[in-house]
Image: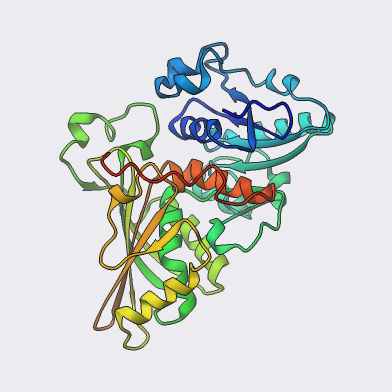
Length: 356
């Protein structure tokens, strides 16, 4: 772990969940980020390794810290990479408090939020979907949302990272819709691992229910559909309709998404392949594969694989990512690298283990 006293400090809010644990793992191996705090209201003073035994070699006796103390450890005038893995509805207020505290110490901050609190540009849109008041509406203009592959550069100081399903769908659908070789109405089937449901046990993640099982949930009414639609329209400048059916898969990590759309004219696999190859020519984490992509080729990495197919008037794009890395913590680090003008691959190039 980088413990150099200089450089960019890294702090994780809401650090005890699965995304928080992945952020801590990635920060521990990042050459430019200096770990400076894993923040948790419920586990302050407890060793990080108690919650995440897999991180014991990296964090030793270091403990979680409280929301009211971590800022005291940062020097005035320092640089701060602030990651939030706090829950939807709680993250915005925590970030607002952190930014106020940092301003008092003249600390330069970039924030990447993995919750939904800054994925919508409009306060009302967020409140309609999540059924709660936004925790920091005054900050909305300081955030933008999108995957790094579709934005040449951040136009704001902070980023609201898209959800894991949204990340996979955007990577599959944006080049398709931009090409105008298909309609902008897409039909999406997504299958996610049990870690996508969070750390706290519930029926949908209970092993006897999940093992050897596959089922849809919230078909056509999942709350990620409005987010996906808004981000697709922002990235493509086309009015878009998204029909989204998510599924729970019998595995812990990963997302497999299939996007279907009607072709506006007869197209071949090669034409669609070329569209994606050109779109992602300078995207180091995206690979366009021949045939169909496989989850085990990307799980536990920040990489994405895409495959395409055509038939008569239909185009199909398949996408696989790791929901906790490319879909959350890894994408957040990728954005943070950009915000601090670091190579976006810094700390993220470890290959997938393959036999998870």
